[in-house]
Image (cartoon, rainbow over all chains, first blue to last red; front, side, top):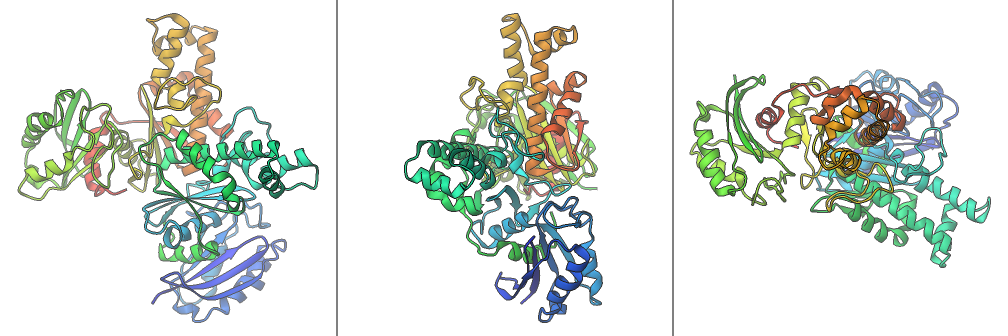
Length: 302
Length: 302
């Protein structure tokens, strides 16, 4: 049996897991990431000490790291870093490789890509050649996995599908996102903004779903617009990659009974093809750390 | 030296070429395809006889076929066929394989995908890991080539990017295309329709470019809208696959001096990333037949 180590480096927690080749988590360690202290301290005080506690690390095939942002996989760095302070261009993978005298390869990738890889290999996409993973949460991101390999892009921006415009004539809400983009209009953040506009400063995106369930027409209109936006996003991605399956994860996807049927109806309406992809819910609990470990198995290749 | 055979099966002509592993065309035969006579006659009277004339066919590594429409590569058939009569589900690849007593593998793929493969391996995209090929002609289609492999999709509809909506509130012009889709609004066909609306029934898309050059404001507005639509299409594709380069082929791309700078400006405006893909003109004269031959080299794999 071969073993791989995954690291899920988030803004709040670091998770390090030893995983076997069948995807079973053998050992699992979680600590606070202290994202604000900077990379040098985080690597020295947290990541190294966590790795040192992994049993028989020297017998593992390699280490995969999932980070919250795009990754330039050719140079193994994050070209920008909004969620981890000063990680821009920081040689995290190289530093971990250098720490150990035995040769252990280290790969680094975007966390949504790693969640998608795990779902493709072990979760809802298992057995399908072309899997498109979409996370619909605070933000909206995606990952393309073809025959078990993730497409990262020249600079890690493949899958930044939240920026795709799904509706014209919308105001611009963020410096980094197009006006009318899927993320601006239909992410948890976008829905929260719309909830506040309707129900005041304390309102949340969850309130919008509750109100819609109660029959509130304004809330229903917003949820229906979201189902249209998300269906159009699926169709747009479908015309580019024509996957066998879309796997949807993230908090907003949890409210599926309310908008999934309409989202899927709209996806079909906007897609030109003769066979629609399945649309399924993500299945795994910790896809980030699992995907990071599986990246080692796939040799970190696009 | 290894040799491959490419077949470019179009609605008007069939082209069969023997190609060496460096992409040189060694032998080249063209005949009318008589697309209206049906597949049985076309295969028996034209394709078989053309293949029989290929020198030392038995020493070639295989045969690749480029066809004008989506291909289900898993079953090696066209699930629909608009340009070749009765080719829907016709087992062309299997029939060619069976004709020869020696084992010669036969692959089949969409012609835009094959043109993209040729441009990726030998043309404007040579040396780049992720190439996105876009043909901007009568229609609009695309192809994703990652490390020399084409992504075809579950049913051959990857790359049917002409159907992506780039503008809201447009009328619907075709049963198969979204209202406001790139192809409806900005293909040669779409531009021809707009030219006719402005200048009468004899007008063509070319006239639109000529009028714009002369300073006609209505024509300039339409060309500027096209530059916006095409820039938005590039950005949308870019958010899904983040390629190293976009390679643009097709007749409308030839008028590049008029709209390319604005198209590229709009691509940058709508794309969220830290590095833009290069945008280059296609370089090859016969990319279809060349790509079909190269498909053999790549073992016909997605």
